[in-house]
Image (cartoon, rainbow, N blue to C red; front, side):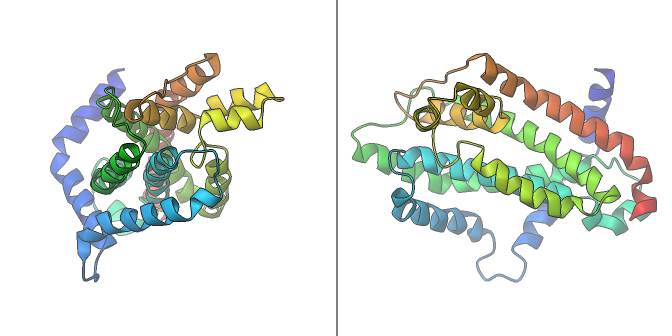
Length: 269
């Protein structure tokens, strides 16, 4: 507990550096492009069009609202994990020459991608509103809980990003392994389907559904959908509480691993 408070104080003291790293990441992402930050809105807009028009053929029985929420949220986690993995190796000169709290590196990736996710809501929410209006409904009255789940997801992303970022310094094969695992994780998370769809498919194997509930991303995606979509109830069986608890566990484990390994970063880069 004292270590966490000390870390928060350190980050607050170096908040200007955190902001500089975050803004640098955002600028580099769109460096040389004519539209710049507009791509933060245009990219999810194009994605929304693709998923709404084409993926309906692949996900019959799953409302498009569920797919859109899943896709945009999954993109947030994927970008944080991939960015966190290269947060140390991609800043080798900075790590070697400047003394600063290294935890800021993966945190800056989560902040930059969190800003991108907020910008993507400018596309996601209007498209969701249109789809709900077409069905004669609107957003759920529980929509403020969306902010809770976004913070909860950011915590999870920071834990995973810190963990893979530290491991990538020691084992460069991490980047290849993470790419494969992300692909598998995508299909094991209810991104392109909802829990009702999963229960119908795996009704003969209830243990499969329990494993799905234990996935932290499943809990987060279900939380987003319950917050935004009318008539959707967030079911929390015992397995889902395990998935819920894995978020703070992953945050603690990721930061703990990162801080334990960071003493050798400069020598290994």
